[in-house]
Image 1 (cartoon, rainbow, N blue to C red):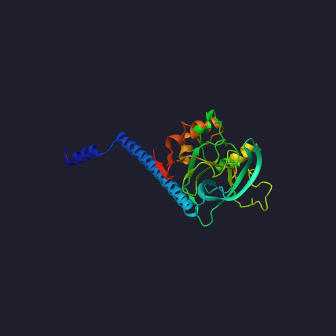
Image 2 (cartoon, rainbow, N blue to C red):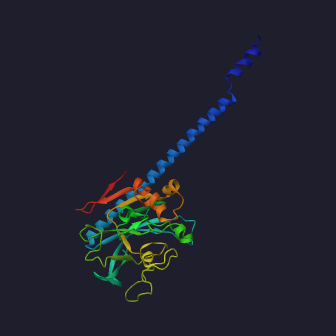
Image 3 (cartoon, rainbow, N blue to C red):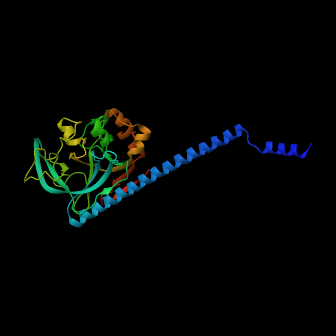
Length: 308
C-alpha cells in the first residue's frame, strides 16, 4: 500500500458525515433556543423586579410627604398613551396627588348627599414612570358585586390597554379602574378619604385642571370621552380613554405585574369579562400567580414587599 493511499484513508476517517453535521447543528440550535429563552426570562424578571422596587420606593416617598406636610397624599397609577403617537408604547405613571378640598354633588342616597372630591397632582413632585409593559393592580373592592361570575373582591382591577381599548373597543373594560392608594396626615394607610361617609367617598383627579368650582364645565370629570362605555357606572368607573377622570379606587394592597408577558403567554386580547377574569385578573389568573405583591403594615402604614 503506497503513501498516497494511506493519506487518503486518514483524511476520510477525520471527516464528518452529513448525519454527524446535522446532529451537531441540531444541538447548537437547541442550546441557542434555551439560551435565548433563559435570557428573556432573566430580562423580564429584572424588569419586573426594578418596577416593584420603583413602586415601593414611590409609596414610601408619598407616605413621607404626607407626614411632612400633615396632609393626605394619594398615589395614582395612571396609564399614559398618546393617540397622536401610536408608535410610542403605553406606560404607567406613578403620580402623587392631593385633594383641593372641592366637592361636587352628583346625587343622593339614603346615607345623604353623594359628592366627588377633586384632586390635583402635587406641584413640584415628579411622577415615576414604570418600564414598558409593567402595570399595577389592586383588588376590586369598590363598588361590590361580581365580574365574570366571580366575586369582585377576588378580582383584580388594573390599567387598561389603551391602544386596544381606545382604537377598537375589542377588549373588555370591566377591570379598567383607576387604582390608587392613600396615606393620611400621620402616615397611616387609608382605604377611604378622611372624614368621608359611605355616601361621599368618591374621588377623582382633574388631570386637565378644568373642573374648578369657580368655573365648572358641563363634564367636570371628563368621563364622557371614551366610546366603549355608555351607562353611568361605566362612565364614572371604567376607563376607556387616555384622558378619562374616573373615580379613584383606593385599594388595600397592590400587585405589580408584567402585562406584556401576560399577553404573550395567555393571549393577545380579552374580548369579554369571563375571558379576561379567567386568564388575567381572576383568582387563578396571571396577576394572582405571577404578580409581586405589596401590602401595608396596619399599624405603621409602611409598605411591605412580598415577592413570589
